[in-house]
Image 1 (tube, one colour):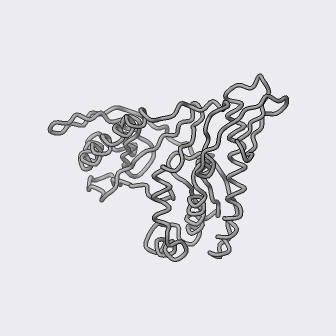
Image 2 (spheres, one colour):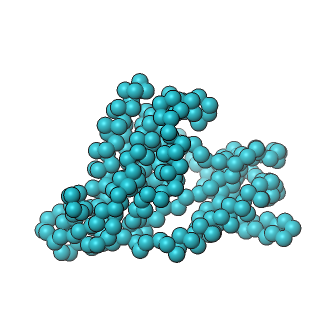
Image 3 (cartoon, one colour):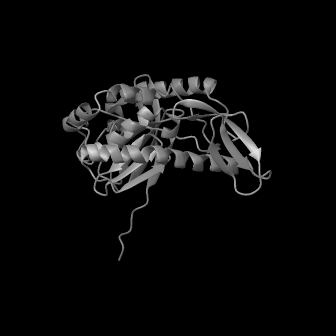
Length: 288
């Protein structure tokens, strides 16, 4: 008989401290530790906790890292305020829009043509052919299909080159939208996933992510051995990562309704709150 998974339960909790009253969403599910997250766009605090964790345990976990929570909540709110002032309008895949292709701006040109909606890069523009009845969603989907093909075509030779250099044997290369990583690796299955948004960044960033994830086939963690391998094979990786994360070289249009949400998770030592172990995790583990 298959094992039944207990459903999660969501409740609200108010945590108070001198001069602070913090509303927290508590999600209890079958797990062993307590995790704290601060989520955009408004700095909402979410605590995932074991089913048996009491409100007291949750409160003590929040209070143990309250300064971190408040600091990052304020930072997220300020970043969202600034982004709202500079965020480009949502893409509609219409003529005149600027789309970014490996770090350079490319003008989108839409031409009416019967048949399947399809996109192709020309020396002058990103050309989208679409029937007159094609709506925004259909045009955007055609551009995304092209982005996936273009990214895969650029990533495949890099994967082969770096796999030979590192003497590893990846079995799968996939592309998908990611919320808070540039790439991920599944070492046991030897699967490499790349973020679709890499197609908007300079190719130097793509090569860094490919190398980063392939090195995880040698060293799954981000410990000293991983850092030594990165230093040996790509001495400039810190600079490339910083430029990739800064995102100053390219700003991709985001399809309507698909704006990704990232989260920040707490870092530092776990507070001793018996009987439930509490782990405050900083997710710095990928090429994100």
